[in-house]
Length: 425
Image 1 (tube, one colour):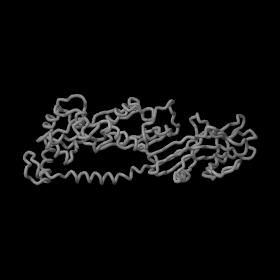
Image 2 (spheres, one colour):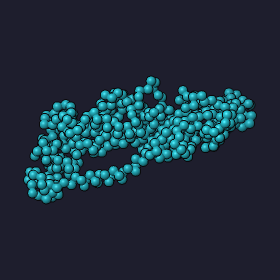
Image 3 (cartoon, one colour):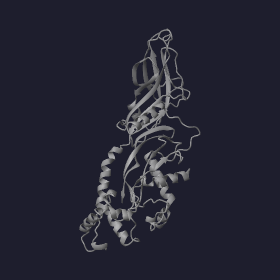
Image 4 (spheres, rainbow, N blue to C red):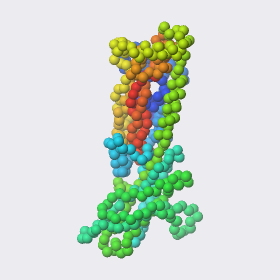
């Protein structure tokens, strides 16, 4: 599995580490890059850089954003995701104009394998058990219990079933004596007029928030279905919920949360401004062509003007058709062994930035001042500075449905996975 991981991070290193300036070069030899060493040679020239350590750090950062401590082990049997979660993923994957109410949606299944209805007539009770774990840095925006109601119809006469369904929280008490009933607190209740078997949802947001504050993960709920007196005895049918652990309609606790990724936009903008200020270099002491002796900022502006507005013919002559640009790169999760925990999509078009940042740097690669200076220094003294790197300058997110410790999780915006624009840095 480790070799598979290393292969993945070799492919995705551009997408994950924008701050890394070392260009990722093609292993195919190019006449344009005769003076450029291969990737492993570049790493060997950098003091203290270990390739395996670098890829391991990249993998750890990737898994951290998904709230995973490590790559999930291969399951002995394929996990079938809940029907609701698949519908959720497909809905937002096909309709880009809509978006869910939260960035992360988790589905927790009923884990009470011995669950069975208590009581035959009057009030039927269904005990449920959920193991819920939500990271504390996430804000729980909503939580709902989804139950699939089963309507038993009378073949001779049927006009629907009118039932009262109530959701109770079962309070844990270590001091409870033998035979003593557990205390319950009502969370949600409503009348259901059932004419067919279908999903019903009950909001339990405050209870889930309280569970997390208490620091406990295992909690019990109890569903009570109350019928009108004598209704079931008269052959008018009954209303059940599907609690079969092997069925696709198993009771689900759906938790919507937000990792507050939107709040980081201002922080990213401030970081970009800081980088721009850092790249204002003084060229006064740099002996680069005819700019020797000129004030740093004035020389920089003159140099940028000369470079950006160079003729397209000269660009083609120097770059030889291999200039920095976005090229296709399809990631197949099955190919890299991650289909065991990534449910959907099966793969996606990630793109990659390929090519060289050769003089002159043109406007379409949006060079920074630092990249321009570095390129000129490289022209004068290749041993002093390397070429600027062809890297992603804008990344887009994808949506992903994945398995995390047995919990089917949907993340609407997993940032930084698709290259949108490339540039020289």
